[in-house]
Amino acid sequence: MNPYIYDNSPDKGEIKLKKDTRHYLQYRVRLNNPLDIVHPENEVILGDYYVPKSRTIHPLMILVHGMGDYSRIPCTMLARKLVKQDIACFVPYLTIHSKRLPKAHKSDMPYLTPQQWFEVYRVSVVDIRRIIDWTSVRDEIDPEKIVITGISFGGFVSSISMGIDERIKAGVLIVTGGNANKISWLSQSNRYRKKYPRSESEHNSVLEKYRQYLDEVQKFGFNNVDAENISYYSDPLTFAGKLRERPVLMINAEKDKYLHKETVIELWEALGKPRIEWISSGHVTLWLRYKTVYKIVTGFLESL
Image (cartoon, rainbow, N blue to C red; front, side):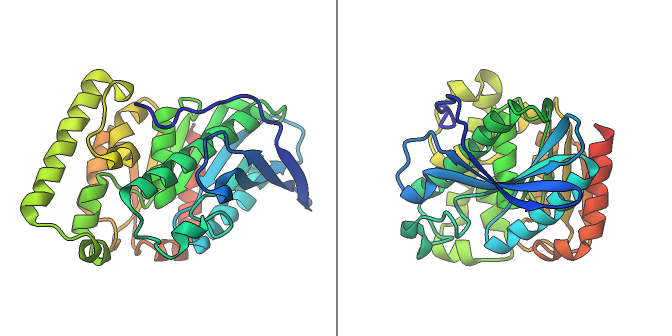
């Protein structure tokens, strides 16, 4: 089963100029979501598209935010810097952003049911794929140079998107780990353990079943294995093997209270041990080191 399959019929979308600066144009873009959507707030894919004014063919960077509206700020900061280096950028509003968050989820976030979280990931990944459909046929974009950068939840979405869609040629995963059940179990923040309590033996059983699923995915391929637990479809580890042949950069926080180092290393190893940079910060305070992060990201892009 592949829950990220969708109708990729052409969509011209709606594009409106939002800002005209010396170096770039910024557009607000609206695309139709091709999924059979449960919530009306997600019928439209919304985002900002930054296009350099230089008359050349540009690579594209898709910058994917995490949970909380504030997490979109570093995405826009990066976009405004990268576009001045002749890199077109697209910054979507995901379904977890207040502009698109379904009313039915507002009172429950972040404690959604497994089915609700599955739909959040499904909508988000298809958003990214639809953005690629739209941008890759535009005259100013080089479809062979599409890169994705994801922050936290956005890093999960980016990992899945890369695993599903080979049009993404490289990825930057910022404060991202793998094995979601282990992440919640080892996290210094115990809010999820309080909300969804289970014994250590139950936890170990969950991990063992997931490991068996990963072994089957490696043998038979993601599309040929049914998941016993719906959360398997939204875990970066499930898709890590598909990223091994493409350039990946990981940037993680040394003092991350949400992502235990073990879960970061597990994803890093599954990805084939790509370049990883550790920043002396916490999960959220990483962006106090914005200049360092920007330098690392641009250095990676120059190496492609």
